[in-house]
Image 1 (cartoon, rainbow, N blue to C red):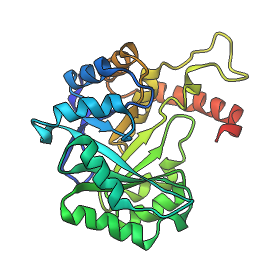
Image 2 (image 1 turned 180 degrees about the vertical axis):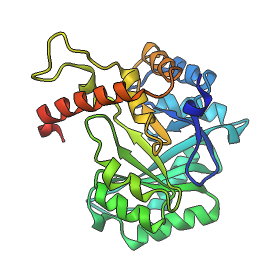
Image 3 (image 1 turned 120 degrees about the horizontal axis):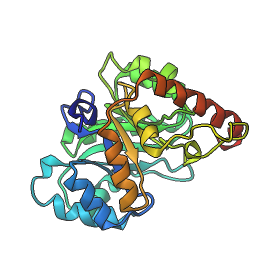
Image 4 (image 1 turned 90 degrees about the horizontal axis):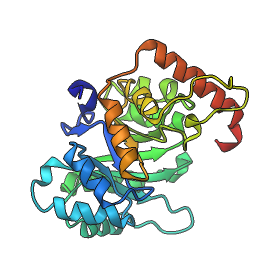
Length: 270
């Protein structure tokens, strides 16, 4: 496997990560999670209620804790009081660990959701050593770009794929000043990038999931791309694709063109 392509340092944190991270969104099974571990995957996004991943991580974190990077977070609760510390402590208990590597404020849709309380509490978690890296997950790209320039957070989890490339203008140009990390998701755009959009030639080329992941990771601003396979076979295919390294410019142009076709026919799903 191309080591330069498959591994990187997570922004300014000094944490070495495998660039294909694993989320258990579609419950791939414990066997698949163990296979990912055997293949060197070390970045795991854990919701807290995904029992398969939580169970596996509890076991492996008992020894060589420093070899694994655990990302989780607290959701933005629009309808009531948000106790971030309680959520963090719950995640620590669930995973039976003393610290979280990447702790994110999830589901931020408006600037007003990121209050001073949230900022201060996240910074306290980092200062206390309970969290190594603090971050934010949002679809509001321009807001993320503004925050990146401020440098409060270490990382951003954002949507980025061949059909949604707005981060290239709104977020990525603001990262270098503070060497901030990017964790991307929906590389296949909920699988819409794996099927023919309206108007695409019947005999036209269709991307594979591997090409979708390689497109995302070919952008040097993306540190980790989360994958969410639903079974062991899909996991192996995704990992195998990384061995081919970054896409060449011709294939990247194909992915951009295909992504535009998907985006234009699926605007309602934005």
